[in-house]
Image (tube, rainbow, N blue to C red):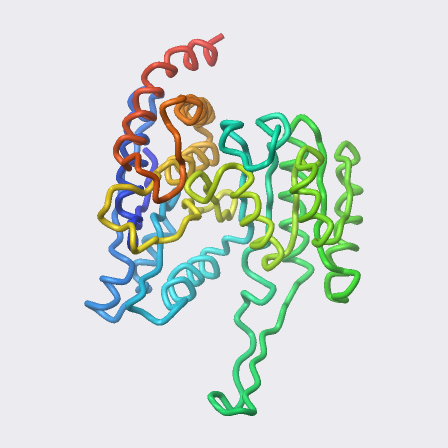
Length: 360
Protein backbone atom coordinates (compact mmCIF):
# COMPACT_ATOMS: atom_id res chain seq x y z
CA UNK A 1 0.00 0.00 0.00
CA UNK A 2 1.88 3.05 -1.27
CA UNK A 3 1.28 6.35 0.51
CA UNK A 4 1.13 9.05 -2.15
CA UNK A 5 0.87 12.78 -1.64
CA UNK A 6 -0.77 14.93 -4.31
CA UNK A 7 -0.36 18.68 -4.74
CA UNK A 8 -2.60 19.74 -7.67
CA UNK A 9 -1.22 23.27 -7.42
CA UNK A 10 -2.08 26.17 -9.69
CA UNK A 11 -3.30 26.91 -13.19
CA UNK A 12 -3.49 23.77 -15.33
CA UNK A 13 -1.99 21.65 -12.53
CA UNK A 14 -5.29 20.22 -11.24
CA UNK A 15 -6.49 19.41 -14.77
CA UNK A 16 -3.43 17.50 -15.92
CA UNK A 17 -3.01 15.75 -12.59
CA UNK A 18 -6.62 14.54 -12.71
CA UNK A 19 -5.83 12.65 -15.92
CA UNK A 20 -2.56 11.33 -14.51
CA UNK A 21 -4.36 9.99 -11.43
CA UNK A 22 -6.92 8.19 -13.59
CA UNK A 23 -4.05 6.56 -15.43
CA UNK A 24 -2.47 5.61 -12.09
CA UNK A 25 -5.75 4.01 -10.96
CA UNK A 26 -5.99 1.97 -14.17
CA UNK A 27 -2.38 0.85 -13.80
CA UNK A 28 -2.97 -0.22 -10.19
CA UNK A 29 -5.97 -2.35 -11.17
CA UNK A 30 -4.11 -4.09 -13.95
CA UNK A 31 -0.73 -4.54 -12.29
CA UNK A 32 -1.71 -5.47 -8.77
CA UNK A 33 -0.50 -2.67 -6.52
CA UNK A 34 -2.48 -0.51 -4.09
CA UNK A 35 -2.07 3.06 -2.93
CA UNK A 36 -3.67 5.69 -0.75
CA UNK A 37 -3.73 9.38 -1.75
CA UNK A 38 -3.42 12.33 0.60
CA UNK A 39 -4.21 15.65 -1.11
CA UNK A 40 -2.50 18.84 -0.01
CA UNK A 41 -4.00 22.26 -0.84
CA UNK A 42 -0.68 24.08 -1.31
CA UNK A 43 -0.57 26.74 -4.00
CA UNK A 44 -1.68 30.28 -4.74
CA UNK A 45 -5.28 30.00 -3.55
CA UNK A 46 -4.23 28.39 -0.28
CA UNK A 47 -1.59 31.07 0.30
CA UNK A 48 -3.99 33.92 -0.46
CA UNK A 49 -6.58 32.45 1.93
CA UNK A 50 -4.26 31.49 4.80
CA UNK A 51 -0.93 33.23 4.27
CA UNK A 52 0.70 29.80 4.56
CA UNK A 53 2.99 28.11 2.07
CA UNK A 54 3.97 24.88 3.84
CA UNK A 55 3.42 24.21 7.53
CA UNK A 56 5.81 22.20 9.67
CA UNK A 57 3.09 19.66 10.44
CA UNK A 58 2.35 19.13 6.74
CA UNK A 59 6.06 18.74 6.08
CA UNK A 60 6.30 16.01 8.73
CA UNK A 61 3.36 14.24 7.14
CA UNK A 62 5.05 14.42 3.73
CA UNK A 63 8.21 12.87 5.18
CA UNK A 64 6.22 9.69 5.88
CA UNK A 65 4.96 9.30 2.31
CA UNK A 66 6.40 7.05 -0.38
CA UNK A 67 6.12 9.65 -3.16
CA UNK A 68 4.75 13.09 -3.93
CA UNK A 69 3.03 14.17 -7.17
CA UNK A 70 2.92 17.84 -8.10
CA UNK A 71 0.73 19.38 -10.83
CA UNK A 72 2.28 22.83 -11.23
CA UNK A 73 3.07 25.98 -9.24
CA UNK A 74 2.90 29.64 -10.18
CA UNK A 75 0.30 32.40 -10.19
CA UNK A 76 0.47 35.96 -11.56
CA UNK A 77 -1.35 37.26 -8.47
CA UNK A 78 1.72 36.56 -6.36
CA UNK A 79 5.29 37.84 -6.36
CA UNK A 80 7.30 36.05 -9.02
CA UNK A 81 9.00 32.97 -7.59
CA UNK A 82 7.25 33.12 -4.20
CA UNK A 83 5.66 29.67 -4.53
CA UNK A 84 8.61 28.15 -6.33
CA UNK A 85 11.12 29.24 -3.69
CA UNK A 86 8.92 29.09 -0.61
CA UNK A 87 7.18 25.79 -1.35
CA UNK A 88 9.06 23.81 -3.95
CA UNK A 89 12.47 25.07 -2.86
CA UNK A 90 11.70 24.25 0.74
CA UNK A 91 10.58 20.73 -0.18
CA UNK A 92 13.86 20.24 -2.04
CA UNK A 93 15.89 21.38 0.95
CA UNK A 94 13.92 19.81 3.79
CA UNK A 95 13.47 16.44 2.03
CA UNK A 96 17.02 16.61 0.66
CA UNK A 97 15.87 15.94 -2.91
CA UNK A 98 19.43 16.17 -4.12
CA UNK A 99 19.19 14.79 -7.63
CA UNK A 100 16.90 15.98 -10.40
CA UNK A 101 16.32 13.51 -13.24
CA UNK A 102 14.93 14.44 -16.65
CA UNK A 103 14.53 11.74 -19.32
CA UNK A 104 14.76 13.04 -22.88
CA UNK A 105 13.10 10.54 -25.18
CA UNK A 106 11.44 10.89 -28.57
CA UNK A 107 8.19 8.94 -28.52
CA UNK A 108 7.23 9.92 -32.07
CA UNK A 109 9.63 11.11 -34.76
CA UNK A 110 7.12 13.61 -36.14
CA UNK A 111 7.21 15.48 -32.82
CA UNK A 112 11.00 15.96 -32.81
CA UNK A 113 12.10 19.30 -34.32
CA UNK A 114 15.34 17.72 -35.56
CA UNK A 115 14.97 16.36 -39.07
CA UNK A 116 15.46 12.61 -39.34
CA UNK A 117 15.84 12.11 -35.58
CA UNK A 118 13.70 9.62 -33.72
CA UNK A 119 13.70 7.17 -30.82
CA UNK A 120 17.13 5.72 -31.68
CA UNK A 121 18.85 9.09 -31.91
CA UNK A 122 17.21 10.90 -28.97
CA UNK A 123 17.11 8.70 -25.86
CA UNK A 124 19.12 10.13 -23.01
CA UNK A 125 18.83 11.17 -19.37
CA UNK A 126 19.98 14.45 -17.83
CA UNK A 127 20.78 14.57 -14.12
CA UNK A 128 21.59 17.71 -12.17
CA UNK A 129 22.38 18.39 -8.55
CA UNK A 130 19.25 19.90 -7.03
CA UNK A 131 20.10 21.73 -3.80
CA UNK A 132 23.35 23.68 -4.25
CA UNK A 133 24.85 26.17 -6.74
CA UNK A 134 22.97 29.51 -6.82
CA UNK A 135 19.85 27.65 -5.64
CA UNK A 136 21.34 27.46 -2.14
CA UNK A 137 19.95 30.97 -1.70
CA UNK A 138 23.15 32.72 -0.60
CA UNK A 139 23.36 36.36 -1.62
CA UNK A 140 21.24 39.46 -1.49
CA UNK A 141 20.97 43.13 -2.33
CA UNK A 142 22.85 46.28 -1.42
CA UNK A 143 21.22 49.71 -1.95
CA UNK A 144 18.21 48.02 -3.52
CA UNK A 145 16.11 50.26 -5.73
CA UNK A 146 18.83 52.88 -6.18
CA UNK A 147 21.11 53.56 -9.18
CA UNK A 148 23.96 52.03 -7.15
CA UNK A 149 22.11 48.76 -6.50
CA UNK A 150 24.22 45.61 -6.19
CA UNK A 151 22.75 42.10 -6.41
CA UNK A 152 24.77 39.02 -5.47
CA UNK A 153 24.10 35.30 -5.78
CA UNK A 154 26.75 32.82 -4.67
CA UNK A 155 27.24 29.45 -6.30
CA UNK A 156 28.07 26.89 -3.64
CA UNK A 157 29.25 23.33 -4.23
CA UNK A 158 30.18 20.81 -1.54
CA UNK A 159 32.21 17.69 -2.02
CA UNK A 160 29.40 15.64 -0.46
CA UNK A 161 26.75 17.19 -2.70
CA UNK A 162 28.76 16.76 -5.88
CA UNK A 163 29.92 13.24 -5.12
CA UNK A 164 26.51 11.81 -4.28
CA UNK A 165 24.87 13.07 -7.47
CA UNK A 166 27.83 11.75 -9.46
CA UNK A 167 27.39 8.32 -7.89
CA UNK A 168 23.72 8.34 -8.81
CA UNK A 169 24.66 9.26 -12.37
CA UNK A 170 27.26 6.49 -12.60
CA UNK A 171 24.74 3.96 -11.32
CA UNK A 172 22.19 5.11 -13.88
CA UNK A 173 24.74 4.92 -16.70
CA UNK A 174 25.69 1.42 -15.57
CA UNK A 175 22.01 0.38 -15.74
CA UNK A 176 21.59 1.52 -19.34
CA UNK A 177 22.79 -0.46 -22.38
CA UNK A 178 25.46 2.01 -23.55
CA UNK A 179 27.16 2.51 -20.15
CA UNK A 180 28.15 6.08 -21.04
CA UNK A 181 28.28 9.14 -18.76
CA UNK A 182 29.17 12.71 -19.74
CA UNK A 183 29.99 15.49 -17.27
CA UNK A 184 28.91 18.92 -18.50
CA UNK A 185 30.39 21.97 -16.75
CA UNK A 186 32.18 25.26 -17.38
CA UNK A 187 35.43 24.55 -15.59
CA UNK A 188 37.35 26.39 -18.31
CA UNK A 189 36.05 29.70 -16.92
CA UNK A 190 34.50 28.89 -13.51
CA UNK A 191 37.24 27.63 -11.14
CA UNK A 192 34.72 26.17 -8.67
CA UNK A 193 33.67 23.63 -11.32
CA UNK A 194 37.08 22.02 -10.94
CA UNK A 195 35.56 20.25 -7.91
CA UNK A 196 33.20 18.50 -10.34
CA UNK A 197 36.10 17.53 -12.61
CA UNK A 198 38.19 16.02 -9.81
CA UNK A 199 35.28 14.22 -8.15
CA UNK A 200 34.16 12.85 -11.53
CA UNK A 201 37.55 11.25 -12.11
CA UNK A 202 37.82 9.85 -8.58
CA UNK A 203 34.31 8.41 -8.42
CA UNK A 204 34.72 7.08 -11.96
CA UNK A 205 37.52 4.76 -10.81
CA UNK A 206 34.83 2.77 -8.96
CA UNK A 207 32.92 2.25 -12.23
CA UNK A 208 35.46 0.90 -14.75
CA UNK A 209 32.61 -0.44 -16.91
CA UNK A 210 31.20 3.05 -17.51
CA UNK A 211 32.66 5.09 -20.38
CA UNK A 212 33.19 8.73 -19.40
CA UNK A 213 33.64 12.08 -21.10
CA UNK A 214 33.69 15.73 -20.05
CA UNK A 215 32.51 18.66 -22.14
CA UNK A 216 31.91 22.39 -21.74
CA UNK A 217 28.27 23.42 -21.66
CA UNK A 218 28.65 25.49 -24.85
CA UNK A 219 29.68 22.45 -26.84
CA UNK A 220 27.09 20.26 -25.11
CA UNK A 221 24.26 22.51 -26.27
CA UNK A 222 25.56 22.46 -29.84
CA UNK A 223 26.01 18.68 -29.83
CA UNK A 224 22.55 18.08 -28.40
CA UNK A 225 21.15 19.81 -31.46
CA UNK A 226 23.52 18.37 -34.07
CA UNK A 227 24.23 14.88 -32.71
CA UNK A 228 21.92 14.03 -29.79
CA UNK A 229 22.63 10.34 -30.38
CA UNK A 230 26.12 10.87 -28.95
CA UNK A 231 24.72 11.30 -25.42
CA UNK A 232 23.47 8.62 -23.04
CA UNK A 233 23.53 10.01 -19.47
CA UNK A 234 24.51 13.61 -18.70
CA UNK A 235 25.36 14.88 -15.21
CA UNK A 236 25.80 18.56 -14.45
CA UNK A 237 25.34 21.47 -12.05
CA UNK A 238 21.92 22.89 -11.09
CA UNK A 239 22.11 26.04 -13.21
CA UNK A 240 23.58 24.40 -16.30
CA UNK A 241 21.17 21.51 -15.89
CA UNK A 242 18.19 23.85 -16.09
CA UNK A 243 19.35 25.06 -19.50
CA UNK A 244 20.14 21.59 -20.85
CA UNK A 245 16.82 20.21 -19.60
CA UNK A 246 14.86 23.00 -21.29
CA UNK A 247 16.56 22.16 -24.57
CA UNK A 248 15.95 18.46 -23.99
CA UNK A 249 12.21 18.98 -23.55
CA UNK A 250 12.05 20.61 -26.97
CA UNK A 251 14.00 17.77 -28.59
CA UNK A 252 11.35 15.30 -27.47
CA UNK A 253 8.47 17.43 -28.71
CA UNK A 254 7.79 20.22 -26.23
CA UNK A 255 7.24 20.90 -22.54
CA UNK A 256 3.84 19.20 -22.64
CA UNK A 257 5.62 15.85 -23.02
CA UNK A 258 8.31 16.26 -20.38
CA UNK A 259 8.41 14.96 -16.81
CA UNK A 260 10.87 15.35 -13.97
CA UNK A 261 11.79 13.63 -10.73
CA UNK A 262 13.50 15.18 -7.71
CA UNK A 263 14.90 12.24 -5.80
CA UNK A 264 16.24 11.27 -2.44
CA UNK A 265 16.63 7.54 -3.20
CA UNK A 266 14.98 5.37 -0.58
CA UNK A 267 13.06 8.33 0.85
CA UNK A 268 10.03 10.29 -0.31
CA UNK A 269 10.69 11.83 -3.75
CA UNK A 270 8.79 14.33 -5.89
CA UNK A 271 7.50 13.83 -9.44
CA UNK A 272 6.04 16.48 -11.74
CA UNK A 273 5.50 17.63 -15.32
CA UNK A 274 7.81 20.51 -16.24
CA UNK A 275 5.41 22.75 -18.15
CA UNK A 276 4.53 25.17 -15.36
CA UNK A 277 1.09 26.39 -14.38
CA UNK A 278 0.20 28.10 -17.71
CA UNK A 279 -2.52 30.26 -16.07
CA UNK A 280 -3.92 31.45 -19.43
CA UNK A 281 -4.86 27.84 -20.25
CA UNK A 282 -6.40 27.08 -16.85
CA UNK A 283 -9.98 25.88 -17.17
CA UNK A 284 -9.87 25.58 -20.96
CA UNK A 285 -9.31 21.82 -20.97
CA UNK A 286 -6.65 22.22 -23.65
CA UNK A 287 -3.49 21.46 -21.64
CA UNK A 288 -1.63 18.32 -22.60
CA UNK A 289 -1.53 15.87 -19.64
CA UNK A 290 1.18 13.63 -21.14
CA UNK A 291 3.91 15.24 -19.02
CA UNK A 292 1.92 14.55 -15.85
CA UNK A 293 1.23 10.98 -17.00
CA UNK A 294 4.95 10.45 -17.62
CA UNK A 295 5.63 11.81 -14.13
CA UNK A 296 3.45 8.95 -12.85
CA UNK A 297 5.51 6.58 -14.99
CA UNK A 298 8.71 7.85 -13.36
CA UNK A 299 7.14 7.50 -9.92
CA UNK A 300 6.11 3.89 -10.59
CA UNK A 301 9.59 3.06 -11.81
CA UNK A 302 11.17 4.57 -8.70
CA UNK A 303 8.74 2.63 -6.47
CA UNK A 304 9.79 -0.62 -8.16
CA UNK A 305 6.60 -1.13 -10.20
CA UNK A 306 8.65 -1.59 -13.36
CA UNK A 307 6.09 -3.58 -15.34
CA UNK A 308 3.40 -0.97 -14.75
CA UNK A 309 5.85 1.80 -15.67
CA UNK A 310 6.85 0.03 -18.90
CA UNK A 311 3.20 -0.49 -19.81
CA UNK A 312 2.47 3.17 -19.27
CA UNK A 313 5.50 4.14 -21.35
CA UNK A 314 4.29 1.93 -24.18
CA UNK A 315 0.78 3.41 -23.97
CA UNK A 316 2.12 6.96 -24.30
CA UNK A 317 4.21 5.93 -27.31
CA UNK A 318 1.16 4.36 -28.93
CA UNK A 319 -0.93 7.49 -28.41
CA UNK A 320 1.72 9.89 -29.69
CA UNK A 321 2.21 7.80 -32.81
CA UNK A 322 -1.50 7.83 -33.58
CA UNK A 323 -1.82 9.81 -36.85
CA UNK A 324 -4.98 11.51 -35.55
CA UNK A 325 -2.97 13.22 -32.78
CA UNK A 326 -1.54 16.23 -34.53
CA UNK A 327 -0.32 18.63 -31.86
CA UNK A 328 1.18 17.89 -28.45
CA UNK A 329 1.82 21.48 -27.32
CA UNK A 330 0.17 22.78 -24.13
CA UNK A 331 -2.28 24.92 -26.12
CA UNK A 332 -3.23 22.24 -28.62
CA UNK A 333 -6.79 21.96 -29.84
CA UNK A 334 -7.05 18.39 -28.61
CA UNK A 335 -8.55 18.38 -25.16
CA UNK A 336 -6.95 17.35 -21.89
CA UNK A 337 -9.49 14.60 -21.25
CA UNK A 338 -9.13 13.21 -24.78
CA UNK A 339 -5.41 12.62 -24.29
CA UNK A 340 -6.10 10.96 -20.95
CA UNK A 341 -8.77 8.72 -22.45
CA UNK A 342 -6.46 7.67 -25.26
CA UNK A 343 -3.74 6.68 -22.80
CA UNK A 344 -6.25 4.73 -20.70
CA UNK A 345 -7.43 2.87 -23.78
CA UNK A 346 -3.86 2.04 -24.78
CA UNK A 347 -3.11 0.73 -21.28
CA UNK A 348 -6.12 -1.58 -21.44
CA UNK A 349 -4.97 -2.89 -24.80
CA UNK A 350 -1.35 -3.46 -23.83
CA UNK A 351 -1.34 -4.42 -20.14
CA UNK A 352 -2.19 -8.08 -20.74
CA UNK A 353 0.82 -8.57 -23.00
CA UNK A 354 3.10 -6.85 -20.46
CA UNK A 355 1.85 -9.08 -17.66
CA UNK A 356 2.41 -12.19 -19.79
CA UNK A 357 5.94 -11.04 -20.65
CA UNK A 358 6.67 -10.36 -16.97
CA UNK A 359 5.49 -13.86 -16.00
CA UNK A 360 7.64 -15.48 -18.67
